[in-house]
Image (cartoon, rainbow, N blue to C red; front, side, top):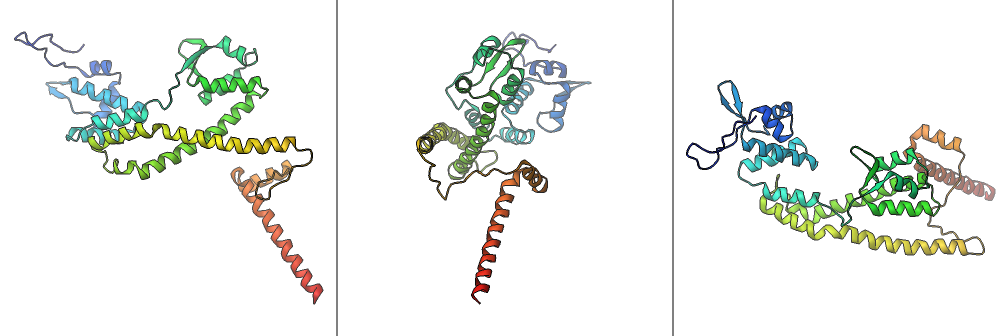
Length: 317
């Protein structure tokens, strides 16, 4: 138990709380081993030594909670140490924590929902599909609920609704999952590029200090709030433009009475024997198959062009 006295000797303000390391672990949620490791790394102030005992206070408890919060937000122990050292030297941490909270906050107005296993099965064919459930959990479309085998958390009801509509239209679940994986990779690339772009042109001036000052961090947090909707607005506008362009082409392709004209600047699918593909994969790796086949084809075309030119010259001579 913590050694706290309810009132000071004069009956006024409560005396500061005092904890043994076991009590501190209980109140903070950290283990005794973790607390000692934080001390060794300089993340936690040393306790007061009284005889053979170490005594901790509320400052230690508050520091442990700060560390836990920053770890939950994805910070490493090394970066947390820098932030806490800035706090200890009087540079302030309030603005930095405000910036962390702003960036870590929701990037959508959508709210998570729950769905029962019975509702889920009814939505997707009426028959249990354990493989599809596992894949949806792996993709984060569904999350398990503790102690509830018959219920799932749905982080994005819109995403699940899209999957349901595609399935109802005849798209197999495996194809939907594969499409989501491909789409997610492309969207993550867009998000990464947007962050690089805004950091270079906007946030670099606020983040030149490590960690930033309270004022710079607060200004950066305000800028995050202003720029937060821009990424989605840009993607929405560009996706609408691209869908209008390509949907028209697809419609023309399928409604044309004869073979549609093929543009020279558009990629064309080429069917190759599976044995050829496997051989190239063994030779250059799966990620380099397309580049290798393209280079090989171009070299063959150039070689034949040179041979034809040489033969023409010999015949003329």
